[in-house]
Image (cartoon, rainbow, N blue to C red; front, side, top):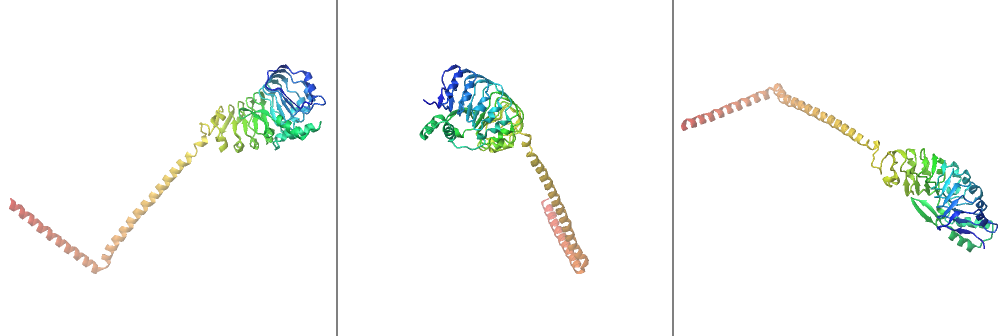
Length: 390
């Protein structure tokens, strides 16, 4: 009997994994998948597993394993695609040897006590920077098995259907990926004791869909080139000590479906963009110097648009006042011109033309005489009527 896959997940198994367990990788067995997650295994990973060079998946998550992450994982298991060791008690730093796993697509070391800094050599995970087909695992299985034994095509497809599944923490959820696992590229280093800055080199892994560095002791800034991760669907950098502003390039991530930057020391205005404003205020909570939508705290720059309005009002008032002064000037000028034209149009004509002047004065004499006679007659009538009544 030939052993290809070993799945002991989700049981109540306990105790140490014996060193003799490495015998499963004897010459006629080419094991590609070990699923031991969600048990109660203790101790360190058996050194004998370094002989299982055909391994593609190692999943020892959700156990009670301790010690340091073995360096031989990176030097002996060159074809590893999935490495899951979350929710254990591993200590020490992330071995630089893991950077030799160029085929790695899922790295989950979350919920341990790992310290030190995030290695800059993570950029060597070339599978996370290159687009792959969903059948990538079928290709890996065929390649690995063909190196050791001739496998019929129908058996490769059957193995692929059984093999292609793994649990991944993304978007704040524990999800089981199966048929599209070949497209899943995730790094989860959350809930550890990592310190230092987020290495800029991590943004070269342009095919990442999930990056979780939350609940660590990270400092410094969010890499300015974070916007290069165009395929990113989930980003969690919460509960660290990150500072400075949110990079504007983050607003360009059109596929981003989950974002959590809460509980840091971020400051300044949240970059304007439909994507970043679509997340709730909880995604930015706990950053006291952060402002702008969707937070209720307004930035100082948000008040400045009112300044030009006030300035415009003043300018409009000055323009109106200036306009009114011109109107008054023209009004008084027209009165003066009208007076001059009217006065000299009549008086000037009478002074220069004697015949018009005589006729004008004769007219005034006649009108004066007529007015005098009319007033005298009326006064006589009033007096006569008064005497009669008396």
